[in-house]
Structure formats: C-alpha cells, structure tokens
Image (tube, rainbow, N blue to C red; front, side, top):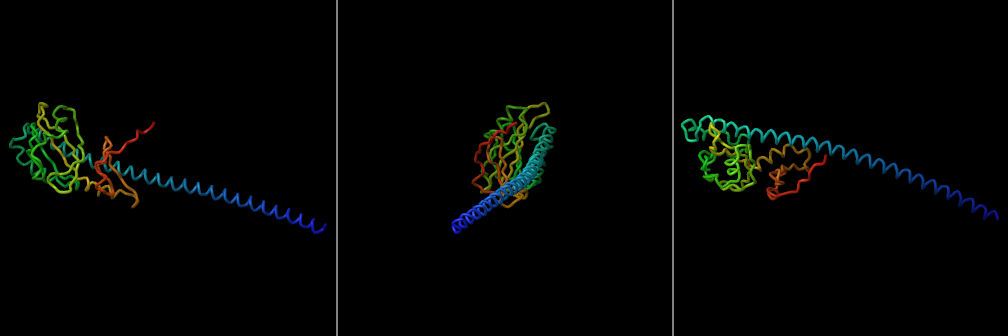
Length: 238
C-alpha cells in the first residue's frame, strides 16, 4: 500500500511538472510568434518605405529628364515657327545646333526635323532614314494641331547596330498655325537604363519604366529581352 500510494503521488507531481512545462513552452512559442510578427512588420515597413522613396526618386527623375527633352523640342519648334519656313536662310545652322544637343543628356541619341511631307531636313546623326512620313506620330501631328508631345514605341535603329530607342515628337507650325512638319528626339533606352541604375536602393531591386499602353520602355538592371514587352497594368483603387 505505501508503495502504491507513493507511486500515485509521484505521478501527480510528474503530471504537474509536465503541465507546467507545456504551459511554459506554449507561452514561449506565443512570445516568439508575436516577436516574429513584429519583426516581419518592421521589415515590411522598412521595405515599403525604401520602395516608396525609390519610386519617388524614379518618378522625379523621369519627369525631370523627359521634361528636359521636351523643353528642347519646344525650343526647336519655337525657333522654326519664328523662321516661318523650314528652308530659309535663318535655319542654315539648325543642323549644327541639333548635333551640339545630341548626347545632352547622355540618352538623347538623335534630333530630327522633317518638313510637312515627312522629308528629313536636319538630323544630328547622318545615316538615319530620310523620311518620317511612315511614322504613326507623323500622321497624328499632321492631323491634330493639339497633339502635344507624342511618345513613340520602342524601335531598333536602322543606322546603329544594337541600338534600341523610343521617340518623343512635337508638331511644327508656321506663324499662321499651318502644319510645317515635326521635330523628333530619339532616346537610347540602354543609356536611360544606366541613369535609372543609379537610383536603385538595393542591388537586388529593379526599376522599370512602362508606357501608358503597358509597353516596357526600359529597365534597370538592363536585360534587352524585357524591352518592348507588354505587361498588364492594374488600375489603382480609390
């Protein structure tokens, strides 16, 4: 009897110890889980903050850089409008002006002026096609006085091997508002990618410039096979 009673007493003590251990383990597990969630939230918050800052830098740079190119197009358009015609003596030096602006900024690969028939009159780089009449943006500018700046699709250069670019163009007019032609800037997408590469906050992050129609214009880092593809853009809520 004493041995049996002693055995029962020991089992109860063991049960209490085991129960206490289980409670302790459960408590520690809950604390670890809570801390893990806190760490995840902190890391996510830091990542979102970094992404937001990086996205803001990308937005600011893109607006400033493309805005700078657009300002050059507007300056050329204003100069040509003041000259009234594209073949006057006043414009004899426009080719030199365009050549001097090429590469400023580094991704500005070419500047072209074409007349109302689409014939290229001035270019910053010889060897380019001699007509712009077959381009979509030329037809838009010719038919729409309010066309503003048009962004063209990603293209392969006919003059330079392995050069891919997209265009920005403006309508040219005479003083009385008649269509006189277009001025076009070609932007080297790989050179633009190098500029974006400087904005990357982390080596494993990437920055992508996507056109309104979903076309990938450029990317940092720069894989050539990603350019020109179309991605689905999700509409923002709210």
